[in-house]
Image (cartoon, rainbow, N blue to C red; front, side):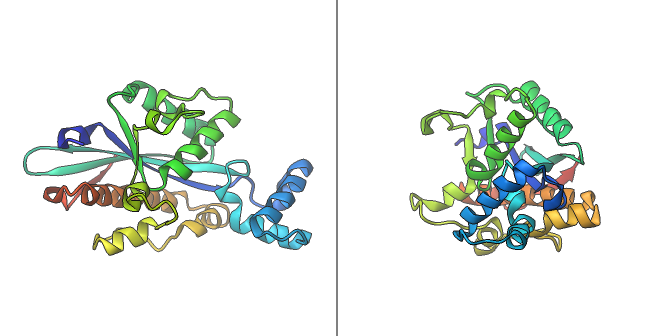
Amino acid sequence: MKKGMFRDILFLDVETASGVRHYSDLPERLKLLWNKKAQTITKDLSLNREECIQVYDEKAAIYAEFNKIICISVGYLAYDEDEIVLKVKSYFGDNEKEILKEFSSLLNVHYNNLKKYYLCGHNIKEFDCPVICRRMLIHDLELPKLLNLSRKKSWQVRHLIDTLEMWKFGDYKSYISLDLLSAVLNISSPKTNLVGSLVSKVYWEENDIERIKLYCEQDVVTTVSVFLRLVQERKFDYVNFVSK
């Protein structure tokens, strides 16, 4: 990828919470379906109700059928000869449908050309893009061109850049978190004292969406820094972060 194309990349990160605060808030049909899901997750067909509730609290935020998107942060690079600036914007709040509509509008208006624009994230192919697409369909929203991924072959989704995949170098058995990857590349992480597994708890129990927004934006910053290292663009080791 040529350096001039970096400006055509939209970096993104998604944060999710469980769809409802408590297992008991699920409709009866979804409770039964979650029980089956919990058994599959744990590989334990003998799970009782209390154990299914515990698995819901720990894992529901991961699965598009049982979660909701509470923040999508995006960033793009703007630079001249001497400075690179990452401009970041977040769509966040309690109204998932509005978050998705605003994000979709961004893609439709500014990133509507599959031959020119790219989406980049860490594990974007396995989590961020699928969860956005599934939640959009659940809300009966039309998918933007860059996210119309159903039944697409690998060569038809070259506009998706996954830093996890870049690091694998063909080793498809491995997984590495963004935190670990940035650490081994000696990239400082601007993370808060929040980790992904606690996002749902912070959302439902502390109602601290601003903290989650900051965490999501900082993931975008780290992703950009990792991407630039992986393409060996050392001139831009430092990324100046501007939140809009």
